[in-house]
Length: 300
Image (cartoon, rainbow, N blue to C red):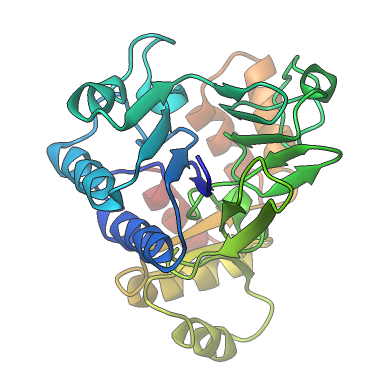
């Protein structure tokens, strides 16, 4: 292969078909503008073991439209039952230019995979170490959704769209273009994608009128999570919810009320249900009956 394009972690679902379609079309457009003979998808193409027919059709069409000499698909994680059993394997059967692997290894030059290492920003107890890959010039991995370069040779390419609100402050979504791979003229370029629907964590730190203006200024494709640090902010969110939930791709909230987390930990220690622990916490709070009724309704 001469020129290589790499992306990862699409996490395709039926609900997110429109966004995923736009992301894949942008990748196709980039491929048409530059000379690419190999495209690598580093895993978590689907978000489940049994994707819908629409999801399968979208990926099948995308692979066909790539019209590449070589396509590398990492069969891993969400779409794989075991290391050898994956829905991704079917694409390798149906097209001769598709190579399905768990990890792609070009000795001393390139390692492609889908895992964390100890040094990853998000590693969830990984036992793999960057020293394991010190003979490679480039180690490119998916799995971590936030872009990260770990010197001297490791890179988490990140998800190609915003999948979870933990990514809201993680910067633009990227793909990697390696030109003249394996030669003295080799160049690596990260390309920011424009198509992923934007994701925001927003605190209600102003009046409802001003906060509504901020929301109205955002694209309807946006994914919004309102952070409520007080009971009053949560009450304000409920006022906004009816108006803005239909407008945005996602409109949800996260409560960070003081003491709630500690109370739920205590409930776990006492071996009582989440619902019972939450009720005991709520009943002790200095909030009026109306707010408690709203909270009860939300918990149903």
